[in-house]
Length: 295
Length: 295
Image (cartoon, rainbow over all chains, first blue to last red; front, top):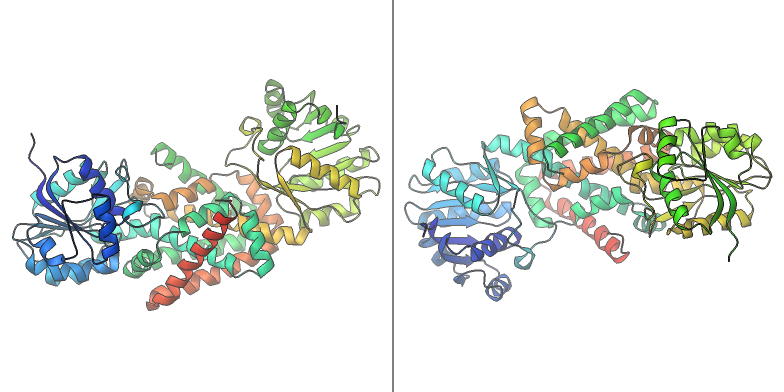
């Protein structure tokens, strides 16, 4: 019998990510002693109870976190710093605080004044998700073969970082450690910019004349359809991500806009070479992804 | 025993679309009497022969088209007008000329001086495809439940339009008739703009610093991965589409760029309302697509 990773784990926010973690933990009872689930929304808690996601399911945040060896915040990015700064003073000494937020710098900046030397802050961002949300959307295999980016506070002891890494390996994920700003630029490029573009292009289609809009819907070929799938994601979550990763996102968006303008110029002037070169680049990236077995 | 739709059909260019048409016709021998396949590339013809795509497989374009009741050009958009203007003088009186081009206006303008009153020009654009190309990429079910947009020349007799419609229904497609300019705007929005954006964003990722680029590939979350799938398409085909649908494409790209700039402004200024509104629009479009059973 192996030692559990945590005697008591508290998950705040059993949404898509949180409930997926909980489902997997229910299937691997040796990993954690007692599972506590909390949320401020009673309907969410009712679903968590019905789905048997925890040993204790409560709307009392303070009671939920105070004896936990690890508190994992699975809430929208904008809620992480407010909740963390509220619970840090009552968490027990030696505990680990983690969150699954998709952005880092703004959270780190907001949280740093509240951190305690006897509590390790080790956020870990699992790069997994679907366009669905809520306790019923989760599933135990969500993290399998996906990356989880671990961005420990520089004062976090190695032992705490190792535990969080082991936890995500148990979730099925591969882990990589990096600093907060690097994380934010990578995620702006591979996830936040594609989502911003997908939301925007759906909006562009929506502003077409009424008769044309209905035909756009009729004839949505695979190109546009893929964009709408991305664009179906949760508005609050993405609003928070965009606002919290503002600088990195606006940086890659600006670069993309310049590239799009260059492509428009090439089309306008009939510059076949530039057009083909841009398309070939896309294919190269595609091939690299296939070699990395990500596509 | 029903009458065949065409006694002799000639397919020029047995690539993804052409070979898919031919595969389906091989499975429905009652539709067409004699199937002729031609291409200027001998390797392509060798594959067409090996795959048994036609009764006659030849590199002699003139001989292939001169006795056909219907000639179907399944070549890149840029090759349609040159080939059509070459074969129109030798096609037989009463025959139908069709093509599967993804753009219309520039082709119509180039072709109009060459049209004959005794040959019906009835292009039909099947909105189907994959990121693969060539004779081996085709499959008989490619067009099932996909739209095929029929844009007849205004002098084409109704009987010819009806035959082309029946042909595409036999391919499994749904058909809609529209004029050339309307076609081009719709396709610019639902297909060409998404492809342009996908090619561009892959290029943007490719210009990141060397170390970051490899991480972009490592961590490509679903957002970016979907874009690379679109971006894997054939460069020649898309170069031609972009150049031939220049005006409509630059029009929707301009509108999209303004929308993206507005989104950037909203993120820069922390305008939560505009951000959420844009995301909600995407979700509305998604819901409409689901109701239309296209997603």
